[in-house]
Image (cartoon, rainbow, N blue to C red):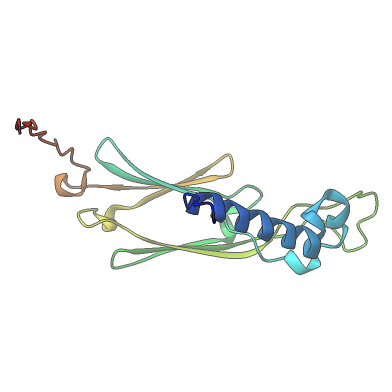
Length: 160
């Protein structure tokens, strides 16, 4: 007789993830510091982290650009599409004299975001401080997040 077992798809997915982790560890050596001595293949694979939020009727975009000269950043708006592109240049010479390993990524990047409707993109203001680019744009009331209350209906149980 066969034993019936409850199917657990989450458990199976975690097994697939473990198998993929093992595959990447075998192919890329786990990207341990010793394997990072030769990162030439990973150059240009850098993208800045972006945070977008509403605050005080302003749509705010923060882009983390450590080590990027603001002169190497280009910001453009086409309709409601914001594009931030630029380059973080390497300060390390190829001979890497004195380096044990080099983890810093560099190269060109491009991030494209869709600005919510109701944000006045014609009044964008950009500031750069401590490696963080901040863009702020005024938002009309219809662009601001709205809270929606959920009505809960009482369930009535019928006696059979």
